[in-house]
Amino acid sequence: MPATAQRDYYEVLGVTRDANPEDIKKAYRKLAIRHHPDRNPDDKSAEEQFKQASEAYGVLGDAEKRSRYDRFGHAGVGGVGQTVNSEVFADFQDLFRGSVFDLFGEMFGGGNPRGPARGRDIQYELNIDFSEPKQESRKRILVSRSEPCDSCRGSGVAAGKQPILCGRCGGRGQETFSRGFMVMSRTCSGCGGTGKIVRDPCGECAGAGRTPREREITVPLPAGIADGNQLRVSGEGEPGAHGGPPGDLYVRVHVRPARGMRREDDDVLSEATITFPQAVLGTEISIATIWGEETLRIPPGTQPHTILRLRSKGFPALRGRSRGNHLVRVLVEVPRKLSGRARGAVVTLSEEFDASSVRSSGDRDANSRRPGEAGRERGAGATGDRSADSSGKSRSSFFDRIFS
Image 1: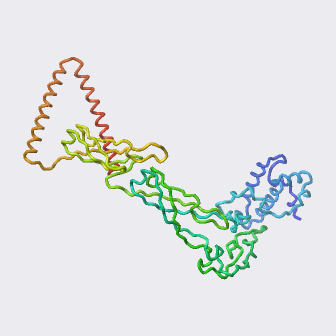
Image 2: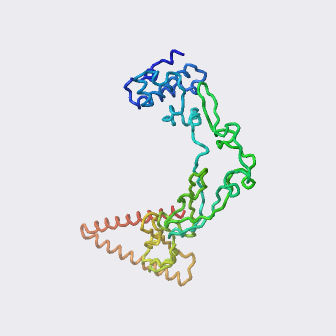
Image 3: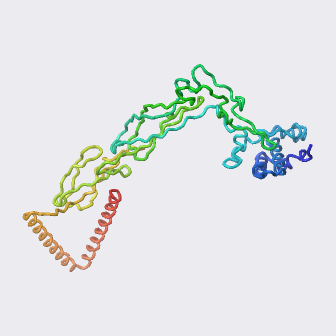
């Protein structure tokens, strides 16, 4: 019996006898990582220290065993040379995950391949028209998914036949092998963990136990849903294995563009072109919205790129009771060719503008003779112009970005 086998377990882990369970756990983690055989190949000393640390934690990490050890020493826990088992590593599933030490997952029961397993999720791409999200609707879609074979009821075995036990694992679903002083287990490579071998596969599913099926599923679309949004339909994915729950169906929505309209959040954006006389005198025009034709009033003196609003003619909010607006940018059309009569009218109008400009200039000159008043008026007018220009630029750039 090696002398090192009689070392005090507290000394092996480097903790005091009154150490709490958390300190003992931390000490073992540190030693296990430092001396693990995979990190120290062909190092017998590291292998021995790893074995001692595992043995010590197997006792001190268990409250009942620790109590017996404190009272009777090694004799109280069955002496030295105890077999290392999975309980020692139960609290350290993340210790070596994602590294070369991932072998522990298979070594100590990293999952039962024959137990219930959740079915796979399914992704579906759904295309809808631009105006459809204006109200709640329901869509029927055709989804392809793998389901248990009707002929063999998911067993993968031909009718009247039975699978045989796997000779490699003896029907256990796992095979064992040695690694140094430790005996390890992993999923059987012969049967994939099922413990059985199918000699006579089902003719319909070729032994897979599943066949593709197309199912019609109704998907509810909430009002206000936008391009790129994704819906989850619970339980409509592929069925689970061995009695496990089904997966989910994920529906990603793609909205087809509409000619002359764009969506910005819950608002709808469009443009309308009017004539110069309409801009000057004002008028009413018809605008196509997602809710149908609406009448838009153009106020007299409307400037190019003015944005007018049709209130609550946009999309409903996805999670709320409000509704967006339909915003219309007004464009003023300048005619390229004019008749003689029309040209004469424009010349007359131009002369009228020039005369008005002269009269306005005379008024300003008269006002300037009144101390203090002209300066105040010029200052107020300049502020108003800047505000209008700034607003116009902001609105124009907003629509230019949307319609570019």
